[in-house]
Length: 370
Image (cartoon, rainbow, N blue to C red; front, side, top):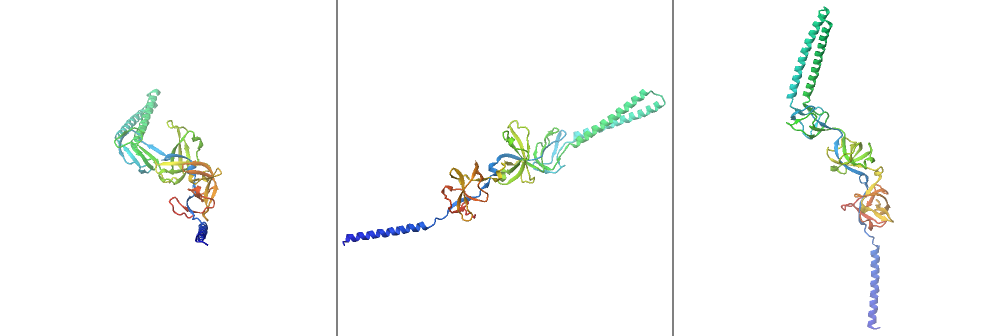
């Protein structure tokens, strides 16, 4: 055997041995299972806010009173500021009472004069009565004195009424709160001359709180008094409060062509402040059963929407068909196929296969304990 043939045989043996090792290595790598891939998971969210019609409005007291003096005059003192809580009967402002006190004195003098005239007429009436009984005067002369007495008595009654009015007006120089509440507006200052009935302060009564919204004329027919609603303060997003539609204006606003709608809170002690911005949600009848999922969680199979649901025990994913009723900015509204307690994959759904095992993490890559 030549050296060349021997070398060729050795080379062939070496190649065969290398092929055996290569096949052995491939078999070893194939036997190693793949590590579970990380996947973002989350619960479906309640779709009440997403599927509902939403309106923005302002928080008001149910009863708001514009308070003003019942007489004209110059404001002598203002005793409250905006934001003060006042009790029923508390003095808010005072007018200069000098002119009204003079009117009381004048009315008192007029009454005294009328009473003196009445007393004189009464005396004359009695004297003429005695003369008539003795037949010294005619019946006509006596009747004249009777009428004079009646006129004097009427003058007294008129003067008494005028005095009562003057005294009442003197008391009207003090502006008092008719109910307990909060002063929301001050429209007049000390030294200002105001007319009778001119608005001086706005009082928001304690008790019922409402949100006033504007509803377009093409939507107002969808609502009725007593309809339930959900309210949410713009400054406290996520805290939902229950309420109901209390009032629908019978006439549209002439400028905006919208209808003023008042939605009352069921809890009068809700932590809302007057003037705050609030959202009002009118949910559909089946809104409580709907869920919302991120758009990135949707997967399509044979033209139908589906999501990957995670088995909480095995961490395996299974494709579950769902019914999507609407698409919103917040996500897809699912009307059937999911329950709030399930975990679903919210990203990378196109890289999954049915039965894959995942390692669930939240939106900031923290492990999730299902």
